[in-house]
Length: 144
Image (spheres, rainbow, N blue to C red):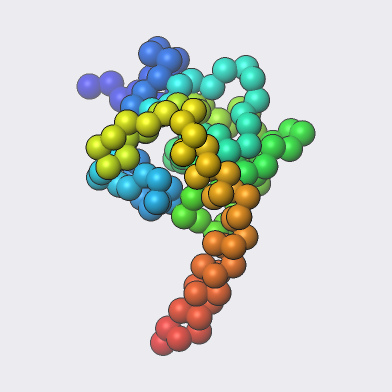
């Protein structure tokens, strides 16, 4: 059996549907329950609020949201994360999410409620990040 990378698969088929692993995209995507579909990234730059699949060296892949578009790179953050990632370039991004299955129901990224959720999640990120950081620091102080 030949093992192919996500890039190879997207090059061959143009899109793929996959199940996420981990908790970084909660509450949108839950491991073992939801699916997401990404299309191969084209030549156009990604936009703020896009959920992108990108390569994190040396060989892991991450699905997170663009929260800032800069001249040469992006700032990216998982919906359930507190640490932003800087310096993600167009060369690192291999796909952009176009749809997802949440609780058994298929949605596209063009739906009003998804766009509303995306804007809330990004535009008010500080309001969810600050309490999480505080909670994390308290846990570290209490931990024996």
